[in-house]
Length: 405
Image (cartoon, rainbow, N blue to C red; front, side):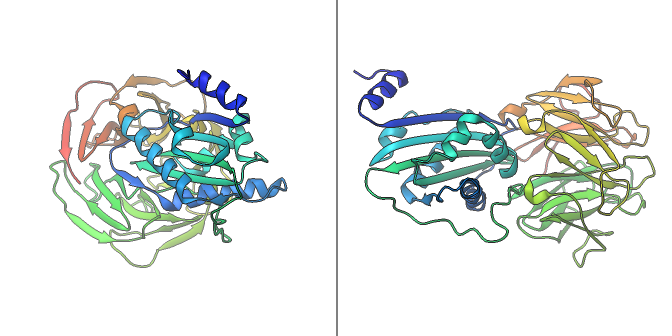
């Protein structure tokens, strides 16, 4: 009698069948809004076949049955906020001689794929010479991707179709959720307030009462939103990163970019960031590549002018930018699980301010802003449509709760 997964594995081996399970947790916050992401699934598929091509293996064919099983399991994991293997995989997939599964969660296709390839077992599944078919399911919860990859060798011949991977496929670019919370000083009054970017539309509020004060279109679905005071006017305006190109505007409206330049390899998983690194009242740019921060002091491409390692970004830390001590300079931090680790310098080392706030592992999205106009950044989390904001760098109840969506 088969009672446990171990018993199942023994039975499968005795029957001449192979079942492989492997799990990867590039842990990030699993927020609320649910969405299947076919574009992210396509990126994973092209990345998988690109890896196989590099070592001389044929590409895997995409099979609808495997995709359906993978999507259903990614949805279950996201609903439970729990990473686990599909206990019914062997019965849900038909006609298999070899069956394998990778599961993971993380912030972007690029970082997840890289972590899978750096794990011996996950890499072995992707490069398994016996496997002929694949299905990938990606479920988004806010900024977190839950992925299931199901691999099969069919008892007959391979079915399905090879994925269409063009010149820009297999890019590993960050998959952007439909709605992204943003914050900025939209009217130059010294207070930072909430906003949303959704498929190219910006909805901004000038206060903490939840009113929508400004709506305009800039960018498009799939762009990464960025916010900063690009010209030192004291007012934040908007921009987007599209592929590896930064497109910035000096006012809160649609139209052509006032500044356009290339920086970083965002299509390969770099995370774009913005901050006032040198205290000159102008926000400039940076990227995080794996755990390494590359910052520039101008709005232009080129090598990072300040480079350091902080946090474990490829293992699930969430990056933070803020002026923690009101000295006019932004520095860095990370959220690891539910714990905030902040530093007052642009350098690696232990967190100098450490506290717990929110339920980041249960779906809260961290946000940073000067909510009370003191020049010092406070913290917050977005839980569904509610922004829970604190003026101090500590845990405790929210000092402002704003319903804004």
